[in-house]
Image 1 (cartoon, helix red, strand yellow):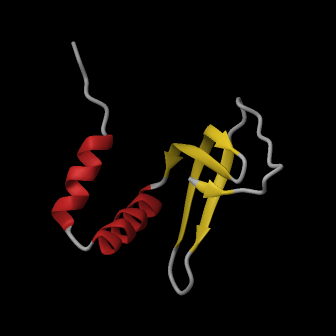
Image 2 (cartoon, rainbow, N blue to C red; image 1 turned 120 degrees about the horizontal axis):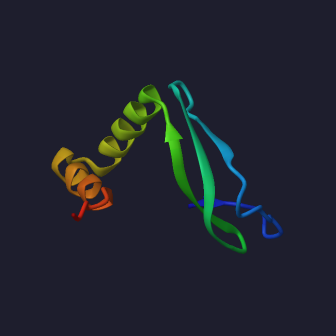
Length: 84
């Protein structure tokens, strides 16, 4: 979720580039599309992210959670389950 202007509109089929600039740190970049939108907030779905960006993002989330095991549980919950 990101904060967007109240009047922000998007094309449902469009792909966007999200660049997160961290002060004093590396940038995180990914290709995204809009998953859902409400006035003032927009949910994005990541379509592609490079290895360096995902490594930095993972570390950032780990530091904010304060528990590496909690991070693993959260990531496992996000991973799609394959069924045969």
